[in-house]
Length: 370
Image (cartoon, rainbow, N blue to C red):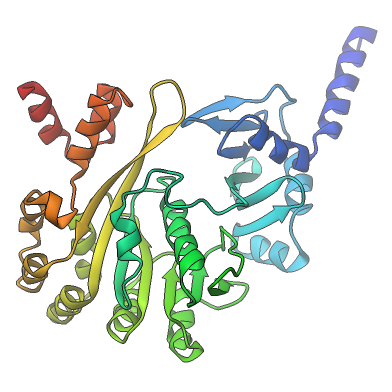
């Protein structure tokens, strides 16, 4: 090997050794990015406005990522990861920020994905959420769902709603998450935040005992199965305000998803429970903003007697047309209307509106008619 090659190799090795996971995570904040990815055979990459961008650092090997990954977790977490090859957790680095992490294995070795979580919980007004949200959170009991794909800002919207309650009401709020993301400080309300895996065995187990813990409000990080959904509906019926999330992309689709989780003979009962306890469904997505950044679109369904009857009578397919009626009075809106409003304001492009639409054919027809 020539002297020049040796020098190049030595510099590359020194650059690898100099990579520090805390500095990398700090760069997520410095660049205004949302995520950091570590994958064997690639330099570290960050996500800015939905696009991955490589950092000007050395290509990572399996050993590099293993050392960085294990420096952030305890022996108990390491054992879970080595047993299951998957690990979800959240953590805070003093002076840097709070992060949600996922470790997984690829054919090359350990890979890591880190999502940045603001330490300061945003208010409802900061992100331009609809005024009706402040009215919804004043309800004493019932079910409020915030839905959308991964990375659509569901956790941020829910955290903002709970923060608003914390600023104005004296309530006991239990959150069950996997993992806990936003950490709330007790202002007027009292928070009991539980991490699935660390503080409780499962969402269903936590909900089973939550009713004995004198809660006013319960947040369920993800309504994954029939047992969890059933427990949430029962809690909402028995005098608690329940917040939950699902990975659905429309308000009517959310209702169908909940009902379809159950066996045929149970569905009539679930429809009756939903009809009486559902307060609202907020289905949101994030789209690229013209000039940089992202903007949320929020389809809002608010239960009224007409909506309740459609759910009870198994006519969910008629809910969408009901959402389009008397919207000034009902405070409901469809995603198509949200997208048209953003297009009129030139906040988003036509291409991104159609890509992000849950009813692209409807949106195209409306645009053609304009």
